[in-house]
Length: 415
Ligand SMILES: Cc1ncc(COP(=O)(O)O)c(C=O)c1O
Image (tube, rainbow, N blue to C red; front, side, top):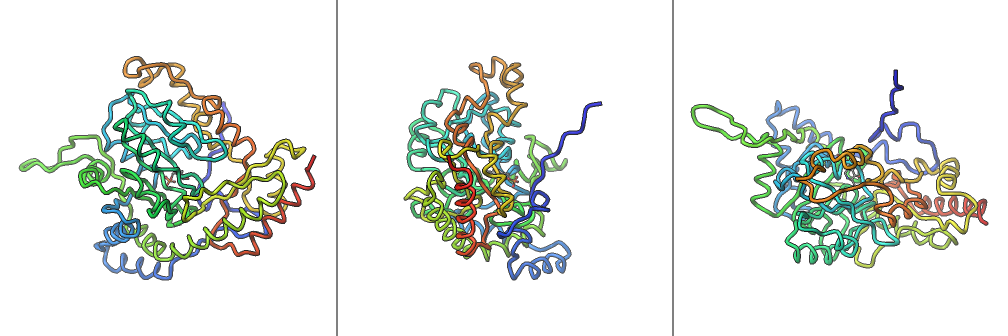
């Protein structure tokens, strides 16, 4: 009998038992109106318009016309992929350093993910890394604002326009990050958000799609929430498309609404503290915090991180991170598993064995997935150390403590 694999864990479950002297996002800070809104749901006997209230508030906050609430970002992006109705075998160019939730939906629609490499020195892709990959099968660009750093969207949108491509955003790690006067998520055709308990707007398990496009918003409700069902007189529901029932619950909407109210202050705190951490870490020889681009007006940082200069230290990133965890930074470690072309072993097998949609047709050529397909991202992650326990509870004293701990580990291991 084969041994049972160790299942991946998410949310609060993943941080239970983490030790350290620095803040931990759990237990989450809850908005003061949280219980009031939950009470309203209960008192209404489940007739409360709480979901619509949250959707309206979030759309207004992001400066977009529509917000459609979902049970998470994985379903939000799955619904978007279905709503676009491309053909099986069509290609979507995607960020290579991300979470499985970014690509789950497009793979289920039998589209082919094509991973663009990252821009050297950072964790995000760019117009320059996307451009060589555009083919006559490309239909969309799905960009991820990893850690909260916004991709340079103007050149990406220009490139997309030139080729007639849709652009959409995964904003799971960047809610309220701001680029050139607009929020992440309002920089393209549509976007998906996560309000998972561990995310910046921690609201239990939730998410949403936002868009300004009237027809797309209607289609997302039809495909994503109405299960592709239409009413036919004298018969009832007929299902004209294979839709989903990805609706947010009223209780999550109540929590999300209360969390949204406290988010601007929390994001301002995250922005100020990550800039302080960055400044302090950049003073340590051999330590390179994630660069914050000049165009980034607000860095709503979900995950803090830095690279180590391999030549400066006797140890690798895993050992360096393990010593920092031991020294008291909860949950710190490397993030090699974010490299999707390496982490999606099922996709590697399907492409290699030319399983549909990698069969010819609908695929137009042979595809292969491995770490080597995105060498810049691979090498970046090899020396990258991050901690997602960074949160709104940070004070300047914690930033100084982080810098002190990183400096001590650096000196202990310096060549
Ligand atoms: C970049 C990114 N995309 C997608 C997801 C999936 O979000 P959810 O857990 O809400 O489905 C996550 C969650 O970790 C994420 O970080």
